[in-house]
Every structure is written in C-alpha cells, then in structure tokens.
Amino acid sequence: MARPWQTLDRHETSDGMLELRRRGDRDFLILLNGRVLMNSSASRSELALGELPCLTLASRPRLRVLIGGLGMGLTLRAALDALPTSARVVVAELNPAIVSWCRGPLAALTGTAVGDQRVTVVNGDVAEVIAAAARPGAEKYDAVIIDLYEGPGSGTDPQNDPFYGSRALLRAADALSVEGLFAVWGEQPDSAFEKRLGAAGFSFDRQRPGRGGMRHVVYVARKRVER
Image (cartoon, rainbow, N blue to C red; front, side, top):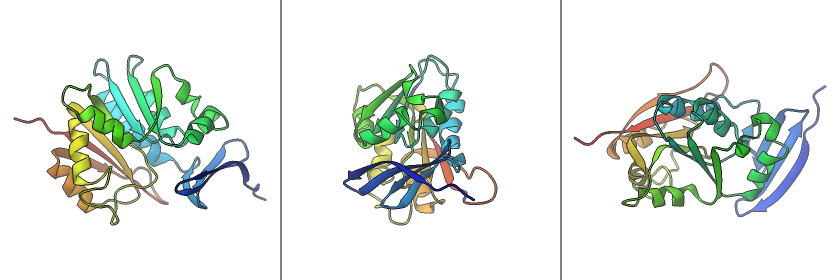
C-alpha cells in the first residue's frame, strides 16, 4: 500500500496556496493551489537544465551563473556538480519559504546545495536581476538559467512576457558575456519562442531529456558573436 502524502508546510502567496508535501524519506512535492509544480521523483529535465549549460562552460575562468527559481534545489545541485570550485552562482528566488524548505526538509535531496560556498541566494525577481546585469558597464553572467514552473508556450505574451517575450530575450542577451548561454525549461517545445530566440541573437539547441513518460524540453541558447 502506498504511503499517504504528508503536508509539511503551507504558505499563502499572491498566486495562491503554496505547499510542501512528503511521502517517505525522499519523495517530495511542491504544489500551488493543488497543482504539482515539482516532483522529486520526476526531475530529469530540471537536472539537465542545470547540467547542460554548466558543463559547456566549465572551463571558463571566473565563471558566473544566474539561476532564476530555486524550486527543490535540484537544478542548482546539477549546476554545482558541473562547475569548478572557482565558479560563482547567484540564485534569485521570490518566495522565502522555498529557500527555507531547501535549507530544511529538502536539504538532503541536494546535499544542502544552497549552503555551498559558491552560492548566493537573492530574495527577488530574476527579471530584475537580469535587467540590472543588462545595463551598460554592469558585470555580466556567463550563463542565465530560467527554472520557473511555467515555461514558454501558447499563452506567452510575445513582446512583454518578463522572461520569454522578445524584449526580455534582448535583455537576457545584454546580461550575458560573449557567447554566454541562456537556458530555459519548458513543458513542450514552442516554435514561437524559438523564433524570438533567433531574433534576439541566439542560436539554440533543444533537448527532451529521458525516454518515456512526460518529456519536458530544455533549451540551451548561445549568444551569437557580433561580427
């Protein structure tokens, strides 16, 4: 008989009720208004999202990585495992409860990735962090990784979406170093998003990690060099 899910914590947010549930020692769910946002047992795309861009860039000196959205910390853990000890990772997370969960009941999943000496956690909107880095003269990131519970799709405002719209993609390009990488998680491939990536000066690779079951998509886009 399957064990029942136990609710460990609940927080009311502007988007609704955010919950952390556990079953056994290592099965966790994060839910928003009853919708599952993350499942610790189904995380192959989140792991790929952290690993793929960081492995590609691992040989760069003084590597700087920005991750938007902490979730269960699995993308962060995968990124850290692929990065050298000299790298620095900024994680922007809006909800303090998520950070608290990753330092507490979720810590064993990731070896307390948020406590790694390479990591700085910022309580804020990653769109604002990207905009700050996009300003002339600002320090740039070698990789920007967007790990939010909603990826690009048919409901995306093609111009004004703060992460996947055309204006946001231009800001992301400006926030990156030469040939920097912009990685995005999505539920399904989205051709309109792919066209916007190209228009913003990115070439990209699309991957759907794993086999069978729900196969989400991971985009790894490279900022093209201006000639």
